[in-house]
Length: 252
Image 1 (cartoon, rainbow, N blue to C red):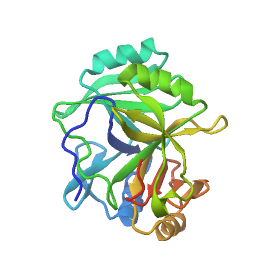
Image 2: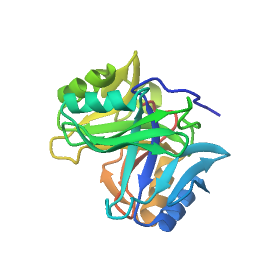
Image 3: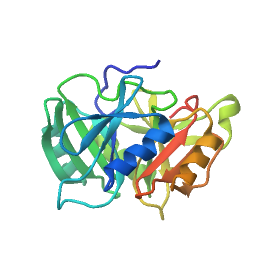
Image 4: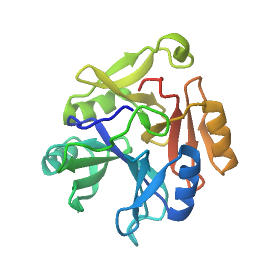
């Protein structure tokens, strides 16, 4: 069971889904991935698989926003400093930093190309604990109009550089030469250049059978966003939040 107990600055460390229908979303994702949910207080739930943390599910504060979205959070040791860097590099801070109970602080921003992104300063080392297996977070994509601008912003914040990830063996179908965001020699996210698409970070959840899981999601009201490849698919849940599914063996 792959467990992560610490995250270096810049590494995606947490995901959550903000939805207008907390009960319906719990049913949708619980049925799809086998998640259970623990009450974190207010209108926020922790998604749990086999007793380990996967991410969060909640509703937006009243009057702030009424849509649905998956958020990806990057680790930081100093939220105040990172906030200043975000603004210096052309990003826009939309909330925070604010306390998140006793666990840490977070803030939300929009990068210069329009992709929403979160930042998490944890009081403990860990974020998502269970990763890289069925039902857990198995990677991320950043969809933006231009890779160079993404490298300037995320490189300025944490040192990210663009790279190329070439999958091997059976998992190579559809992903040969995949553009990535790399940090300290590791590819932490796929980088999707799409001048006409909606900018944003997309979390991927692992599934054992991609075809069957996609069919289950569509039957439950999800819609396809991007044509499936041999290793991943991107969908919009019944409330509009975009997420991906992938086989755990497919890297990034």
